[in-house]
Length: 221
Image (cartoon, rainbow, N blue to C red; front, side, top):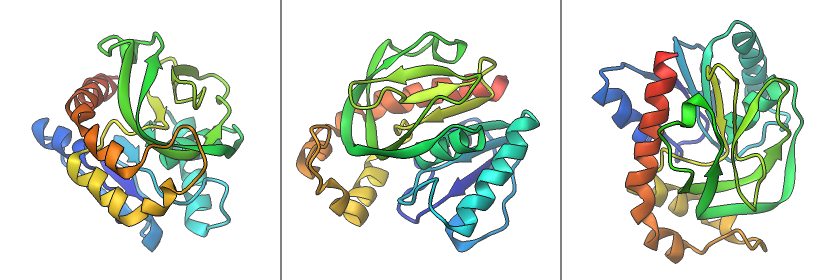
């Protein structure tokens, strides 16, 4: 498995635990350092503080790589920025929503083979402001009042994109809050303060379990 990382303070978090429990070796490519892009059978594209529409060489290189990989049927899972990069690679517009969502908020799950083991409603961690239109040929699999398109997947489940963070752990949440707390300084009804976010970290186990169930299904596709 290959993981593309975009900033030092957003790492693989619980994805690493899942991989170790399943004896799946993985390597990390530090995209912001312009390390050469590669991908194994499984590719996970993490979040970051930049946008899919930014004029950055490594962002444009990722989109082109993803465009080719998706056309070839490669299994790809994008989170936050990673989801937006996948949407862009599939030809969908990616743009600022003019709002932000940050904190532990509910999402509603839609029917898909990927989501059979997931609760119809669950609380997951959010930290995003950009959004996207659904790429052609994909299905919306999660939404909420803040962002209609919280997640999508192809019908076969080989491509998955989530705006939210199933993978958040206590350590990764604290790292994000310490490194990027200024993100919370924005007028939005969908932003919680840092104290509230930390107090609601009890959602981490259920969110991680949902991630593991989804990754298990994806790995077997």
